[in-house]
Length: 89
Image (cartoon, rainbow, N blue to C red):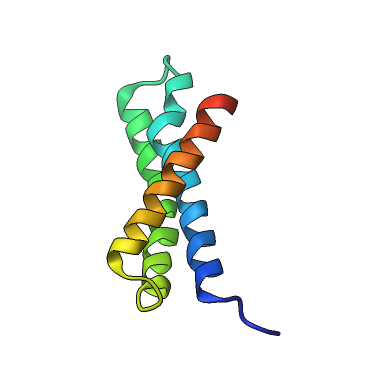
């Protein structure tokens, strides 16, 4: 089975990690009755999965992309994911 190109893997992982990140940071806003400690702990739990995707994305992508390019790609993805999140959630 052929391997996916580095940009596809990197961008796919960054996209997935940003979905987790957005829910970790903003998903709790719909649950106003939950205690602060609860939403913090749940957010940390979600953020764990974000890091499990973000770190490999940067590891795989570095070398094909510079660190500045990786950060720029991540920021564009972050804004795109948040735009969709803010409309749908």
